[in-house]
Image (cartoon, rainbow, N blue to C red; front, side):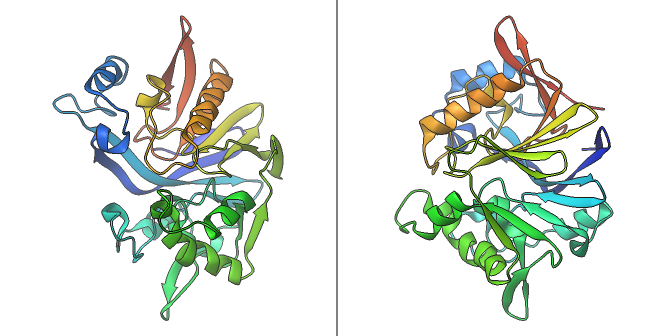
Length: 298
C-alpha cells in the first residue's frame, strides 16, 4: 500500500505479513462453497484465488501522521512470542520494525499507540524482549486500550474459546505496558464516540471483543476509518454473518459490522481494515441496494 493522504493526514501501512493464503472454512466456520463462489463474482484474484478455495489476507499496522504526531494503530503479532497452537504467530522472527523504518520511523518516534482490541495479532509489537524481559517497544508512546477488553481478558478462564486469542498476549504484550506506566485504559462501555486526539475519535463497536473500537480520523473534510477486526475479509460484504472462531459475541459483532458498512455506504469515508490485502483501503458503495467495495488504488 502506498501512503494515502487524507487532508493533512498521511497514512501508511506497516506490514508484518503482506499476503497470507487462508482456507475460507478454516477462517470462517460458516463459510460454504456457495458463499465463496458468490464472493468470486464480486471480488477479483487479489482477494480470492481463482484456481482454489483460498482467501488472501494481510496482517499489518497503520501509522497515521497528523499535527506533528505519529500514531500507530494496532501492533500485529510481535517477535518471539509463545503462541502454542496458533502456529502463524508462534515464535515469529519478522522484519516489522524494519518495515516501520522504511516508513521513515523508529520505535522511539511513535507518540501514541491505539489498540482497536486486545487480540494477540493486534498487540504483539506493543512489547519486545530486552534482557529477558518484555518491555514497551515504543518508549515514548502512550498506549490507549479499552478498559472493557482489559478487564474481560484479565478475568478470562483459560478454557474459554476466546482465551487462545488473547490470554498469552495479555501477559507478554499488555501487562508489561501497564507496569511501565504507559497504558491508558479508556471507557468504551455505552460510549458512542470519544475524541482521542485532534481530528481523531473512537466509536464503540462491540462483539468481536467486548471493547472493540473503531478509530475515525478527519482532515479537511475527508474521513478515514480504521476498523480493526470489525471486518476481516472483503467476502464479508457478500455475507456479513460470516464470523471467526473465538469471538466474544457473534450476533453483536455481526450487528456492529452491518452498522459500520451501512454508515459508510456512499460517503467519502475510506475504510482501513486490519487484514485486507493490497490495495487495503476501500470505500463502501451501494449498488441497487446491495453493498460492495470500491478499492482505492491511488
